[in-house]
Structures are given as structure tokens and as C-alpha cells.
Amino acid sequence: MLRFVTRFSDKELAILMKYNLTSKQFILTKTIKKTISYCCIGLISALAISFQSQALEGNLQIHKGEESGAVGYNLSLSDRFSPGSGFGWNISYNHLSELAVTWNEDDLYFDSDSVEVLGTYRYTPKSYNSFLNSLIFEFQAGASVQLTENKFIWETDKNGTPLSEPIEKFFSEQGDINPVLAFLTHYKFSRKTQMHLGLKYYPSYSEFDGQGTIFAGFTYRFGNQFGY
Image (cartoon, rainbow, N blue to C red; front, side):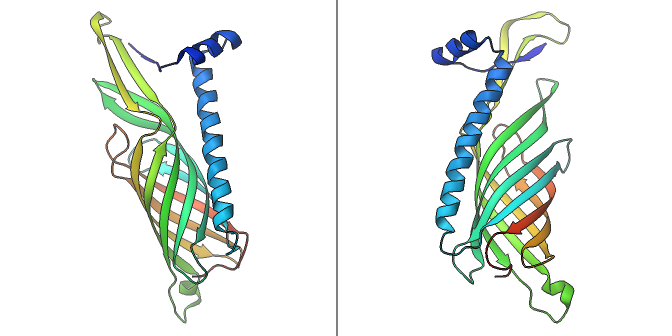
């Protein structure tokens, strides 16, 4: 038998009792509040950095785990550091569901929310071919900050016999920092819009092995035309 638990401060326990919330409801509320805070900070920073270049991009991606049933989405803002430069940055909010791990002979699944800060480099081919001229290749590298805390506790063995001492395990904690690598291929539809396909890889993901996703996305530019 296993169940989900988390650690609450005295203040948080008081909130649970006052509003008659379940632990799951409180965890969701707590995660959403943290997510909104991180995203607001990221948005303000992004707008400040992009004030001069006026080339801010909004991105939406749908992700699928390469070897698991994990699915998720990504919302991000990105820009180049200076006009004409291939180097830039990306700030995003990410959600993944059904991340799987096998531990203590149990198959476990959890949801993950994170904020990522990435450095980017884009290369635009120069060719007489119109299709190649519509492509942009992008490399990304940076860090992911975990917003979700996930912990499981085993109280009985496989036969239902109570354990003398419960076994507990944290799989992710708020504030965990994990490396991120990604490669994208963009296709430009117009000066303002493009779609992209890509691969993302986390060499380590908190207490999990490396995680990878494939994704498809859409980009809209609020400023200057595409091209670096």
C-alpha cells in the first residue's frame, strides 16, 4: 500500500483546518501560487530585457515522453540578446503528467511543474532553395527549477502485511535544479508566425533517471521579423 504525503508547516496546517481543504487541494493551490509567482517574475524580466529589441516571441509546445506515457505542455517567452545576434534566451513554464518510475517494486506516476531558464543559439541556412530559407535550427541549454514536491510512503508489503517501519521516498522537491538540453527545427510561415519540432532531454531529473520528450510547437513574434 502506498499513499501520497507532503510536509506542512504549522501555518499551512492551520490553513487546511480553517478552509477544510484536503491535502491534495492544498498542494494544488500551493503549486499554482508558486507557478504564478515564478511566471510573473519571468514575464517582467523578459519584457524588461526585450524593451530595446522589440522582438519578443511567445511559444506554445505540446510534449510527449520518448519512452513513457508522459505528456505535457510548455509556455515560454524568448528573444535574442541583440539585433542580428544568433544568441538569445528563453524563459518557460512547463507541466508534465504521468512521469513514471519503478521503485520498491511499485510502478509510480507523478505530475511535475517547473520553470526553465535557457540560453539559445539559432542558425539560419543561406540557400537559393525557398524551403531551406524557411528553416531555422536552434540549440538550447540551461536549468530547470522544480516547483512540485512529490513523496511516497509505503506502509505495507506486497502481501498487505504492515511494515515495522514505513518506507518513504522523495522523488522531487521544490527548488530542485536539473540541467536541460534541447534541439529545435523551425519553419517560418510568415514574418510573424512559425511552427517547430524538437527534442528535449534532462540528463537528470531530481531522483529519476534522465527524461526525454519530443514536442511540436507554435511561435508568434510580437516585434521584428524572424531571422537572425
